[in-house]
Length: 425
Image (cartoon, rainbow, N blue to C red; front, top):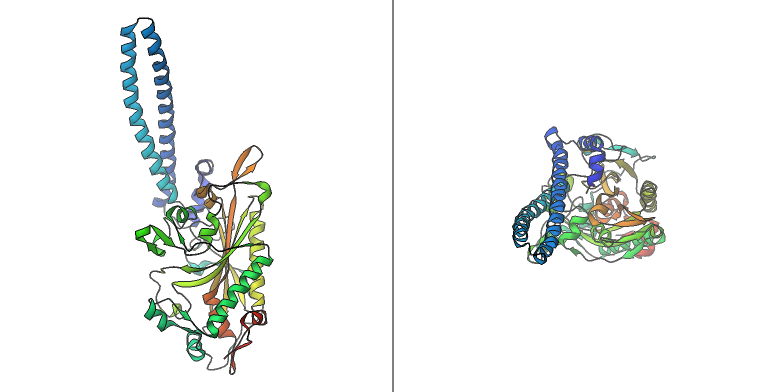
């Protein structure tokens, strides 16, 4: 959530940032509404404070007047106090209502894009930040997409997943299950080597947790909701990991804080249809290893590039061709100031598949979470960052497709100690 004082002090910057996100002129009016609500809040609070101070002063005088035998004056003062009390009650209700409306409007405003975010409306406008430097792999005639390889080698079963749960819930088996487990262990080990603390978080979160990282109200329709318990299945480990530090005041020396965690992730992916979402390209449940950092505001963009380098290193060890995109304003996540996406090349599908997003949220999440750090005698909001390192479903798809041979699917050397086999056949 944007800070009120930032909106007021940087109104033109905020408006330009929202234009980069393709806000219409009508939608931009929300900023003026927020400022007007804040003015009303301030004026109401000032009037209420003045009234309460007068009431308190009069209450003290009433006792003195009675002692002096000035009963008439004391009764008059009592009437005035009663009038002030009634007015105070009205102002308190107005203040409460204004604060609620102000908070509701603030929740509707996304983060302001970093100055490097390109203009654009859709993913087609994303900028290729770092292209793949080599040649893309070419498969021989008759090469199969991963969903057909899955049937051939009994790796995963979409039909059984549909039978047990529904469409978009794959069931992994045999060497496919071992490959999945190997990738999780490999990604976690790489993160731990890089200094991240491993966490096993809950898979269900409450409303406060979902709101703190921006899933509510923006992504409410994409999450699975357990109505009876008012809990949400997590769409990513970012949500519980980041909330570990909700309502915490850190010391500057605590930075950087680096966390990693493996979790299944659950996303409704409403409205996703077509050939581009076949197989593992888009599913409702998938495994992912997440990396999260909390950092000093002066160092967060250096940290962002450090996190990019970490994901690059993992993909290089998997021997997968990849490129990095800088997301445009129209494709940028609600809470992000700057996001880079990693895409791996699927040789059988002849297309790029997104496998990681690495983002800097600056103070947007920390303001919602009230995550601060001591800076001398005052406190400031920390910066939060996160990245997928990595999401498994599409990684598995690319590994299967790119490494298929007549003998079977060759497992990258970095994974063989984890899988216990070098060929999936």
